[in-house]
Image (cartoon, rainbow, N blue to C red; front, side, top):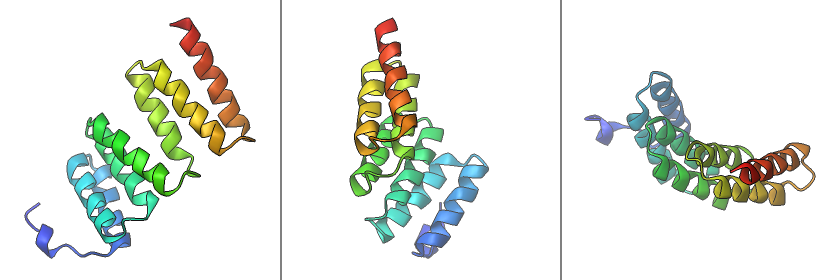
Length: 129
């Protein structure tokens, strides 16, 4: 975007702009805006999650995975990155990574019935392949 130098460094505003861009399907520019939010607040996991979602919509799964992993490094108790990672790996038919991701999810949330169910489902899926 030609106006990048004039963009604010206000993370809530950047997040709102990124969400609007994502909503209209301008996924790569949305990812760029979320990356600006990361630059402004590098320790906020939600910014990495937003960038990952935008890159996933832009069909760049490697970047999406990298940002999801960075979100989990900053806050391993966010549930959505685990689910999104598992979805990406499932779309790629990588059952081993789906299972590993759900195992990590269960480790973070050992009492979660949803996590337990996801691990069992991933195990069944892996056995079927």
